Amino acid sequence: MPVLLSADHPQPLPVSLSTVRTDAERLLQLCGQQPCDWSILLVDDPRMARLNEQYRAKKGPTNVLAFSLREGETYPDDGPLGDVVISLDTAAREAQREGISLRRRLQILLIHGLLHLLGQDHERSEAEAERMEADERQLLNRLDDTQRRTSMTNLAINVDHVATLRQARGINEPDPVLAAGICELAGAAGIVVHLREDRRHIQDRDVYLLRQTVKTKLNLEMGAAPEIINIALDVKPDMVTLVPEKRQELTTEGGLNVTGQKKKLAAVIDRFIGAGIPVSLFIDPDLKQVKAAKDIGATFVEIHTGRYCDADDETERAKEFNLVAAAADEAFAMGLRVNAGHGLNYLTTAPVAALKSIEELSIGHAIMARAIFVGLDQAVREMLAQVAAGSR
Ligand code: PXP
Image (cartoon, rainbow, N blue to C red; front, side, top):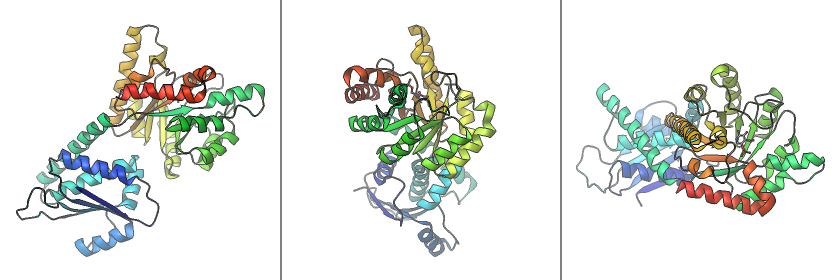
């Protein structure tokens, strides 16, 4: 067993151990290591502070410590590598400060620890510090590349239109909460609802109930209005997606103008991140908007696929697709997590699912329209087949 991963932390872990193990195993491979024992221990701050004092005579916790078993000796290539200890508390604080996921922060710390185990040391000289930093960046990029090639795109389903039908009669059916359960049973990886200021479809009751019933991931779409922000902070969805909202529009018409309202959006992002809720910004496939989203600390961007889907001819569609792909790749390269959505249907989804920098697609209308004829379970499964066809 090449990677021996254990955790000694009093709270439920905010990260899946199997993902950390997978990342560590891939890193070993990328460093050209023969299968060898690499022990990784995830601890809390108090334990890290004790180790830091004991081995480095330093007060307080640090993020990562590495104890090489290969220092200064001849050793077999497949002999044990050593131990890396990471403080999850410190890693989580750093992730929040940098606006990146905890998994991403752990990847960076694993790489740092691994290079120490392999004999690099940034404290020896400036030149070595520079080399180590360059190697760290390169390893992180290569890790992303392996990941891009291996993971399947998620499908999150927007159930607003079930509520639209309910509101048309002003009665209590069909129920978007029930629809969300059916979507999850059919294989959806998440549920999305948009709580609009005019409450034209989703109601407060839906959001509170979904918070209790959704087993996968609840993504609350919303405009940055104070009333809705307060509800979101109270509901605590798994993430929020900020969208521009106009009362007259039939559906969200375009992406957020992030460049034009950086200060306002940064303050909203800070409130959510401070409450432990990751924030996605719905933006047009425009590199300036991607950069601005990164600058103000968004966790995700959702790239607007509307113009790609609505293109009048294939030339136009290819042009719009290239813009989506370029924006998604650029966002991913900057360390943002990337979703996409709007207008995707059974014909336009697979090519977008094939973009390796995109983690999740958010789709509503096409699935609900098909569900009327074939049933919701079947409509979800057919869309999942499109996503899988693209992800292959
Ligand atoms: N993403 C965002 C930000 C949206 O506003 C919507 C529509 O509510 C969607 C995705 C889903 O779009 P569609 O219903 O066209 O699939």
